[in-house]
Image 1 (tube, rainbow, N blue to C red):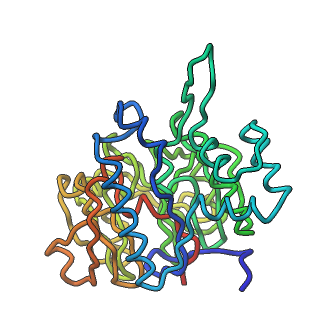
Image 2: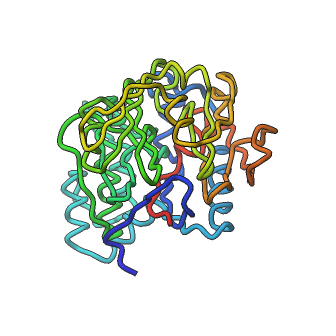
Length: 333
Protein backbone atom coordinates (compact mmCIF):
# COMPACT_ATOMS: atom_id res chain seq x y z
CA UNK A 1 0.00 0.00 0.00
CA UNK A 2 1.45 3.33 -1.01
CA UNK A 3 1.39 5.96 1.68
CA UNK A 4 2.05 8.78 -0.68
CA UNK A 5 -1.47 9.96 -1.02
CA UNK A 6 -3.51 9.87 2.13
CA UNK A 7 -6.90 11.44 1.82
CA UNK A 8 -10.47 11.78 3.03
CA UNK A 9 -13.31 12.62 0.67
CA UNK A 10 -16.06 12.85 3.26
CA UNK A 11 -16.38 13.03 7.04
CA UNK A 12 -18.64 9.93 7.03
CA UNK A 13 -16.35 7.65 5.02
CA UNK A 14 -14.96 4.69 6.94
CA UNK A 15 -12.08 5.83 9.12
CA UNK A 16 -9.02 3.72 8.29
CA UNK A 17 -6.08 5.50 9.92
CA UNK A 18 -5.83 8.19 12.54
CA UNK A 19 -3.09 9.99 14.48
CA UNK A 20 -3.24 10.77 18.20
CA UNK A 21 -0.88 12.18 20.81
CA UNK A 22 -1.19 11.08 24.41
CA UNK A 23 -0.81 14.17 26.61
CA UNK A 24 2.51 14.14 28.46
CA UNK A 25 4.69 16.32 30.69
CA UNK A 26 3.98 19.36 28.52
CA UNK A 27 0.44 19.46 29.94
CA UNK A 28 1.69 19.85 33.53
CA UNK A 29 2.76 23.40 32.76
CA UNK A 30 -0.59 24.36 31.28
CA UNK A 31 -2.38 23.01 34.34
CA UNK A 32 -0.62 25.64 36.47
CA UNK A 33 -2.50 28.32 34.56
CA UNK A 34 -5.11 26.76 32.25
CA UNK A 35 -6.49 29.87 30.53
CA UNK A 36 -3.03 31.19 29.63
CA UNK A 37 -2.53 27.98 27.65
CA UNK A 38 -6.01 28.04 26.02
CA UNK A 39 -7.30 25.33 28.36
CA UNK A 40 -10.84 25.56 29.71
CA UNK A 41 -10.10 24.30 33.23
CA UNK A 42 -7.75 22.30 35.36
CA UNK A 43 -8.00 18.49 35.28
CA UNK A 44 -6.14 15.35 36.29
CA UNK A 45 -3.36 14.50 33.84
CA UNK A 46 -3.19 10.95 35.20
CA UNK A 47 -6.88 10.39 34.49
CA UNK A 48 -6.64 12.18 31.15
CA UNK A 49 -3.86 9.80 30.04
CA UNK A 50 -6.00 6.84 31.09
CA UNK A 51 -8.95 8.21 29.09
CA UNK A 52 -6.66 8.65 26.11
CA UNK A 53 -5.58 5.00 26.28
CA UNK A 54 -9.23 3.99 26.37
CA UNK A 55 -9.98 6.13 23.30
CA UNK A 56 -7.05 4.60 21.43
CA UNK A 57 -8.08 1.04 22.34
CA UNK A 58 -11.67 1.74 21.29
CA UNK A 59 -10.46 2.97 17.90
CA UNK A 60 -8.26 -0.10 17.48
CA UNK A 61 -11.12 -2.40 18.46
CA UNK A 62 -13.15 -0.76 15.68
CA UNK A 63 -10.45 -1.69 13.17
CA UNK A 64 -8.88 1.77 12.87
CA UNK A 65 -5.10 1.89 12.57
CA UNK A 66 -3.91 4.32 15.24
CA UNK A 67 -0.62 6.12 14.70
CA UNK A 68 0.97 7.63 17.78
CA UNK A 69 2.68 10.91 17.06
CA UNK A 70 5.74 10.38 19.24
CA UNK A 71 6.12 6.69 18.40
CA UNK A 72 6.13 7.30 14.65
CA UNK A 73 8.74 10.09 14.90
CA UNK A 74 10.93 8.11 17.34
CA UNK A 75 10.89 5.01 15.13
CA UNK A 76 11.91 7.04 12.10
CA UNK A 77 14.79 8.66 14.04
CA UNK A 78 16.00 5.18 15.04
CA UNK A 79 15.93 3.94 11.47
CA UNK A 80 17.05 6.96 9.52
CA UNK A 81 20.14 8.96 10.38
CA UNK A 82 19.40 12.01 8.25
CA UNK A 83 15.95 12.27 9.84
CA UNK A 84 17.59 12.07 13.28
CA UNK A 85 19.96 14.87 12.24
CA UNK A 86 17.02 16.94 11.07
CA UNK A 87 15.30 16.66 14.46
CA UNK A 88 18.58 17.37 16.26
CA UNK A 89 18.97 20.60 14.28
CA UNK A 90 15.41 21.56 15.08
CA UNK A 91 15.91 20.94 18.80
CA UNK A 92 19.44 22.36 18.91
CA UNK A 93 20.76 19.69 21.29
CA UNK A 94 23.44 17.20 20.32
CA UNK A 95 22.07 13.83 21.44
CA UNK A 96 21.26 10.63 19.59
CA UNK A 97 18.49 9.57 21.96
CA UNK A 98 15.19 9.81 20.03
CA UNK A 99 12.98 9.70 23.16
CA UNK A 100 14.90 12.56 24.71
CA UNK A 101 14.80 14.59 21.48
CA UNK A 102 11.03 14.33 21.10
CA UNK A 103 10.46 15.44 24.72
CA UNK A 104 12.78 18.40 24.22
CA UNK A 105 10.96 19.31 21.01
CA UNK A 106 7.58 19.33 22.74
CA UNK A 107 8.73 21.00 25.99
CA UNK A 108 11.36 23.44 24.68
CA UNK A 109 13.32 23.97 27.92
CA UNK A 110 15.94 26.73 28.05
CA UNK A 111 18.52 27.32 30.78
CA UNK A 112 18.93 30.96 31.82
CA UNK A 113 21.13 32.03 34.77
CA UNK A 114 20.90 28.61 36.38
CA UNK A 115 17.12 28.55 36.02
CA UNK A 116 15.31 26.18 33.69
CA UNK A 117 12.67 28.01 31.69
CA UNK A 118 10.05 26.05 29.78
CA UNK A 119 9.90 28.66 27.06
CA UNK A 120 7.22 27.46 24.70
CA UNK A 121 5.76 24.06 25.57
CA UNK A 122 3.04 22.52 23.40
CA UNK A 123 0.28 21.42 25.80
CA UNK A 124 -2.37 21.66 23.06
CA UNK A 125 -0.55 19.17 20.85
CA UNK A 126 -2.91 16.38 21.87
CA UNK A 127 -5.59 18.14 19.82
CA UNK A 128 -4.26 16.47 16.69
CA UNK A 129 -7.11 17.65 14.48
CA UNK A 130 -5.85 21.19 14.20
CA UNK A 131 -2.35 21.31 12.73
CA UNK A 132 -3.50 20.07 9.31
CA UNK A 133 -6.53 19.09 7.28
CA UNK A 134 -7.07 15.88 5.32
CA UNK A 135 -8.86 16.49 2.02
CA UNK A 136 -9.64 14.45 -1.10
CA UNK A 137 -6.46 16.06 -2.41
CA UNK A 138 -4.29 14.86 0.48
CA UNK A 139 -2.82 16.53 3.56
CA UNK A 140 -2.62 20.30 3.87
CA UNK A 141 -0.53 21.65 6.76
CA UNK A 142 -2.10 24.80 8.15
CA UNK A 143 -0.87 27.73 10.19
CA UNK A 144 -1.90 28.05 13.84
CA UNK A 145 -3.54 31.31 14.85
CA UNK A 146 -2.33 31.43 18.45
CA UNK A 147 1.17 31.99 19.77
CA UNK A 148 0.69 29.03 22.15
CA UNK A 149 0.22 26.60 19.27
CA UNK A 150 2.42 28.07 16.56
CA UNK A 151 5.21 25.50 16.90
CA UNK A 152 2.90 22.49 16.68
CA UNK A 153 3.09 22.25 12.90
CA UNK A 154 6.87 21.74 13.21
CA UNK A 155 6.15 18.56 15.12
CA UNK A 156 3.34 17.28 12.89
CA UNK A 157 5.36 17.89 9.72
CA UNK A 158 7.92 15.48 11.17
CA UNK A 159 5.13 12.96 11.70
CA UNK A 160 3.92 13.10 8.08
CA UNK A 161 7.49 12.93 6.82
CA UNK A 162 8.24 9.96 9.08
CA UNK A 163 5.22 8.13 7.64
CA UNK A 164 6.38 8.97 4.13
CA UNK A 165 3.26 10.98 3.39
CA UNK A 166 3.48 13.93 1.04
CA UNK A 167 1.80 17.13 2.17
CA UNK A 168 1.22 20.65 0.98
CA UNK A 169 1.77 23.54 3.34
CA UNK A 170 -0.14 26.78 3.17
CA UNK A 171 2.03 29.81 2.58
CA UNK A 172 -0.36 32.54 3.62
CA UNK A 173 -3.17 33.01 6.09
CA UNK A 174 -4.27 30.93 9.05
CA UNK A 175 -5.86 27.49 8.80
CA UNK A 176 -6.74 25.05 11.61
CA UNK A 177 -8.22 21.57 11.22
CA UNK A 178 -11.06 21.98 13.71
CA UNK A 179 -12.66 24.33 11.19
CA UNK A 180 -12.76 21.90 8.27
CA UNK A 181 -15.21 19.25 7.06
CA UNK A 182 -14.88 17.33 3.76
CA UNK A 183 -18.40 16.68 2.43
CA UNK A 184 -17.74 14.58 -0.71
CA UNK A 185 -19.08 17.03 -3.30
CA UNK A 186 -18.15 20.15 -1.37
CA UNK A 187 -16.07 21.40 1.55
CA UNK A 188 -17.03 23.37 4.67
CA UNK A 189 -14.50 25.66 6.33
CA UNK A 190 -15.19 27.86 9.35
CA UNK A 191 -13.40 31.19 9.71
CA UNK A 192 -13.27 34.00 12.22
CA UNK A 193 -11.51 32.79 15.33
CA UNK A 194 -8.59 30.59 14.30
CA UNK A 195 -8.85 30.25 10.53
CA UNK A 196 -8.99 33.37 8.35
CA UNK A 197 -10.32 33.97 4.85
CA UNK A 198 -6.84 33.88 3.32
CA UNK A 199 -6.25 30.49 4.94
CA UNK A 200 -9.61 29.21 3.73
CA UNK A 201 -8.87 30.38 0.19
CA UNK A 202 -6.15 27.72 0.00
CA UNK A 203 -9.05 25.28 -0.56
CA UNK A 204 -10.64 27.14 -3.45
CA UNK A 205 -8.94 24.96 -6.06
CA UNK A 206 -10.82 21.95 -4.64
CA UNK A 207 -14.18 23.04 -6.09
CA UNK A 208 -17.18 24.08 -4.02
CA UNK A 209 -16.17 25.55 -0.67
CA UNK A 210 -18.61 26.95 1.90
CA UNK A 211 -16.88 29.59 4.03
CA UNK A 212 -18.69 29.81 7.37
CA UNK A 213 -18.22 32.95 9.44
CA UNK A 214 -18.19 31.96 13.12
CA UNK A 215 -20.10 34.49 15.17
CA UNK A 216 -18.89 33.50 18.65
CA UNK A 217 -15.54 33.57 20.41
CA UNK A 218 -16.26 30.72 22.81
CA UNK A 219 -16.91 28.32 19.91
CA UNK A 220 -13.54 28.99 18.36
CA UNK A 221 -13.60 26.10 15.88
CA UNK A 222 -16.50 25.02 13.70
CA UNK A 223 -16.35 21.51 15.21
CA UNK A 224 -17.33 22.99 18.57
CA UNK A 225 -20.91 23.55 17.42
CA UNK A 226 -21.20 21.49 14.23
CA UNK A 227 -20.33 17.95 13.16
CA UNK A 228 -21.22 15.36 10.53
CA UNK A 229 -22.12 11.86 11.75
CA UNK A 230 -23.47 10.42 8.49
CA UNK A 231 -23.99 10.91 4.77
CA UNK A 232 -27.45 12.35 5.38
CA UNK A 233 -27.29 14.14 8.73
CA UNK A 234 -25.37 16.83 10.57
CA UNK A 235 -25.36 17.72 14.26
CA UNK A 236 -25.35 21.36 15.25
CA UNK A 237 -26.59 24.25 17.35
CA UNK A 238 -29.38 25.71 15.21
CA UNK A 239 -28.98 29.25 16.58
CA UNK A 240 -25.24 29.30 15.91
CA UNK A 241 -25.69 27.73 12.48
CA UNK A 242 -28.25 30.41 11.58
CA UNK A 243 -25.96 33.16 12.90
CA UNK A 244 -23.10 31.90 10.73
CA UNK A 245 -23.09 33.81 7.46
CA UNK A 246 -21.97 31.40 4.77
CA UNK A 247 -20.36 32.34 1.47
CA UNK A 248 -20.33 29.59 -1.12
CA UNK A 249 -17.45 29.64 -3.61
CA UNK A 250 -17.03 27.57 -6.74
CA UNK A 251 -13.32 27.43 -7.63
CA UNK A 252 -12.91 30.81 -5.92
CA UNK A 253 -15.93 32.50 -7.47
CA UNK A 254 -18.65 33.60 -5.04
CA UNK A 255 -21.89 31.90 -6.09
CA UNK A 256 -24.17 32.24 -3.06
CA UNK A 257 -24.52 33.93 0.33
CA UNK A 258 -26.63 32.09 2.90
CA UNK A 259 -26.21 30.71 6.43
CA UNK A 260 -24.89 27.32 7.54
CA UNK A 261 -28.30 26.04 8.61
CA UNK A 262 -29.97 26.81 5.27
CA UNK A 263 -26.94 25.63 3.31
CA UNK A 264 -26.77 22.09 4.72
CA UNK A 265 -30.56 21.80 4.69
CA UNK A 266 -30.56 22.68 0.99
CA UNK A 267 -27.85 20.07 0.45
CA UNK A 268 -30.34 17.49 1.75
CA UNK A 269 -28.91 16.89 5.22
CA UNK A 270 -31.20 16.25 8.16
CA UNK A 271 -30.20 18.44 11.12
CA UNK A 272 -29.92 16.90 14.59
CA UNK A 273 -30.14 19.89 16.91
CA UNK A 274 -28.19 20.24 20.13
CA UNK A 275 -28.25 23.30 22.38
CA UNK A 276 -25.41 25.66 23.23
CA UNK A 277 -24.89 24.12 26.62
CA UNK A 278 -24.58 20.62 25.13
CA UNK A 279 -22.08 21.99 22.63
CA UNK A 280 -20.05 23.51 25.48
CA UNK A 281 -20.03 20.05 27.09
CA UNK A 282 -18.48 18.74 23.81
CA UNK A 283 -21.55 16.65 22.94
CA UNK A 284 -21.12 17.51 19.27
CA UNK A 285 -17.37 16.93 19.29
CA UNK A 286 -17.56 13.26 18.39
CA UNK A 287 -15.53 11.33 15.83
CA UNK A 288 -17.37 9.73 12.92
CA UNK A 289 -15.78 6.36 12.16
CA UNK A 290 -18.26 5.15 9.55
CA UNK A 291 -21.50 6.29 7.94
CA UNK A 292 -23.83 6.74 10.91
CA UNK A 293 -21.32 5.42 13.48
CA UNK A 294 -19.60 7.72 15.96
CA UNK A 295 -17.31 7.63 18.98
CA UNK A 296 -18.82 10.19 21.32
CA UNK A 297 -17.88 11.73 24.68
CA UNK A 298 -21.38 10.92 25.88
CA UNK A 299 -24.61 9.38 24.69
CA UNK A 300 -27.65 11.54 24.04
CA UNK A 301 -31.17 10.48 23.06
CA UNK A 302 -30.79 12.93 20.19
CA UNK A 303 -28.32 10.44 18.69
CA UNK A 304 -30.75 7.50 18.77
CA UNK A 305 -30.66 7.16 14.96
CA UNK A 306 -26.89 6.75 15.13
CA UNK A 307 -24.65 3.91 16.22
CA UNK A 308 -22.89 5.47 19.23
CA UNK A 309 -19.83 4.17 21.04
CA UNK A 310 -19.36 6.15 24.22
CA UNK A 311 -15.90 6.97 25.57
CA UNK A 312 -15.65 9.11 28.68
CA UNK A 313 -13.07 11.89 28.19
CA UNK A 314 -14.12 14.28 30.97
CA UNK A 315 -10.54 15.11 31.96
CA UNK A 316 -9.20 15.38 28.42
CA UNK A 317 -11.93 17.87 27.49
CA UNK A 318 -10.55 20.25 30.13
CA UNK A 319 -8.09 21.29 27.44
CA UNK A 320 -11.07 22.75 25.57
CA UNK A 321 -11.84 20.11 22.97
CA UNK A 322 -13.47 16.73 22.49
CA UNK A 323 -12.82 13.50 20.61
CA UNK A 324 -13.05 15.14 17.16
CA UNK A 325 -10.39 17.64 18.24
CA UNK A 326 -8.09 14.92 19.54
CA UNK A 327 -7.96 12.88 16.35
CA UNK A 328 -6.10 13.71 13.16
CA UNK A 329 -7.46 11.86 10.15
CA UNK A 330 -4.78 10.10 8.15
CA UNK A 331 -7.07 8.17 5.82
CA UNK A 332 -10.74 7.54 5.22
CA UNK A 333 -12.55 5.43 2.63
